[in-house]
Length: 96
Image (cartoon, rainbow, N blue to C red; front, side, top):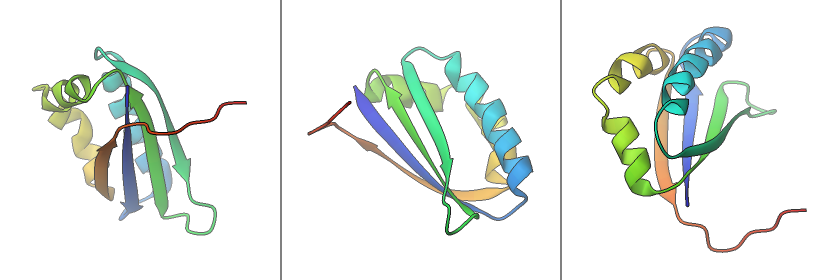
């Protein structure tokens, strides 16, 4: 399992961004390997969001992002925010 962390800085309207994110996420939910995700908005900077997604593998994430239809789904989101993402491997964890 891997964690994909993607930070977004809004350049457009927050409601439009969240709607575009949800539409892109619907496409990704249909791809093999996505376990779960959480989009969170920074309390002290409402123009800043972070998405934390768990995937079965880096290959599954890369295949979803390389899917020919992904660009069409992400286009609206990219027009509303700048993003920077990275893939992480778990090292330590805790769950209550």
